[in-house]
Amino acid sequence: MPPPTLTITPKLLLSVFLVGALASAVVAQDCGCVSDECCSKWGYCGTSPDHCGSGCQSGPCNRNDIQVADIVTPEFFNGIIDQSDGDCAGRSFYSRDAFLRALGSYQGFARLGSDDDSRREIAAFFAHATHETGNFCYTEEIDGPSKDYCEEENTQFPCNPSKGYYGRGPLQLSWNFNYGPAREQIGFDGLNSPETVANDPEVSFKTALWFWTNNVQPVMDQGFGATTRAINGDLECDGSNSATVQRRADFYTEYCRQLGVAPGDNLTC
Image (cartoon, rainbow, N blue to C red; front, side):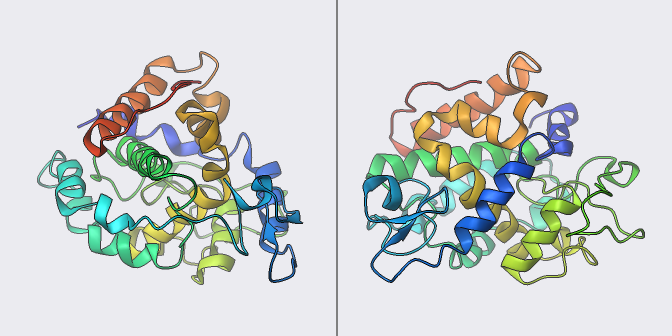
């Protein structure tokens, strides 16, 4: 199990990059394309591979026939969570069944590109989740209640002063400017009841998949290192925390090995 110092690194999960990324994601959700056009990761309509391939938001995206449940087997999932301490809150919270229920709302997850592309995306998602939660040990950020993750200038998603927007869930969702739009897409009251992410396992996985498909999946074709940058930016990349970057990459390469796929290039950032 990763030491606690590694599981709390996502405390500023999206602070570096999401203001811009979130804007593009919102545009992408409202492309307004005609039925035979794809909404690209940048929010434009069209039918080219750039529109319908990696990062495609809606429309006839180039989804493959992969069944994620056949790859995320009980053995694979339990092989992660079984490495956490027996008294971890996450052991009775996270489950493969909750992940698969949440997945029903995100049909594009690990469904773009080739079979190998799908396997690499699954390996990447679970590598980051493993690192962020300590093998699915933590449902909330360590010492999270003591942290202030309210961007007061964000009037679109104003903070509830009695609530804390610290890291929760498989990718440690943080900040009001994430809980707010997650609420709109998933249907839970993220600003007034952010604790739902640590209390409802299906919602918890949905927040991770929501963030992933909007902000991480579009850079999968740039290598695993790009996914680390999408999650924690210069808090870890460009030499800020090389050990943490390498640890994420180590999880990823191990999961690629288990899933029978080459990890590809550009593993670090």
